[in-house]
Length: 210
Image (cartoon, rainbow, N blue to C red; front, side, top):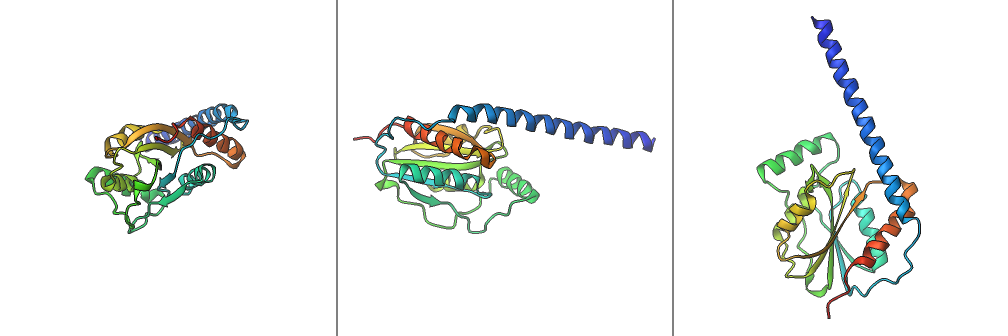
C-alpha cells in the first residue's frame, strides 16, 4: 500500500514539474513575441507631459528598474515607497503577504507622502503580488489623495497582472487614471526592447492640461 502512495506522490510531483515547465515555456514564447514589436525606438517626439513624478515600490528590483527607465526618459522626479519594517524576499514573503491581505493589516510606510500639487502627471508602479496590488502600495494608496490629477499606472510581474488594475483603481482616491501598462520580468537580452516599450508608452500619454 505504501508503495502505491509513494508512486502517486511521485506522479503528482512529476506532473507539477511538467506543468510548471510548460507554463514557463509559454510565458517565454509570449515575451519573445511581445518584445519583437519593440525592436525599434519610436521616432515621434515625447509629448509635453509637464512636470512628472514617478512613485513606486520595489522589493526585488524589477519595479525599480522600470521606474528608472521612465525617470530617465521623462526627466521625472522619483519617490520610492519604503516601509517602516522592510519585507524580506523568499518563500516566507508569500505567507506574510497572504496574512496581510487576509487580515487587511497593511505594512505602514516609513516616509511622508510626496506632495502631488506641483506635478502635472503622476506615474505609479508596483509589483503584482498574489494577483493584486503589492501590499506596500496598498498601504500607500490608503493615505494618498491624488486630487483629480492624471495618474498613469504600471505593473511588474512574472506573467499575469490578475486584478491589479481594477484593485488599484478602486483604492486610488481621486485619481484620474489615464493609462495602464504591464511589464513582465525579463532577462537582460530584452533591455533595449524594454526601453523602447517605455518610450512608446510615454508617447501614448496625454499631454499636460493647460
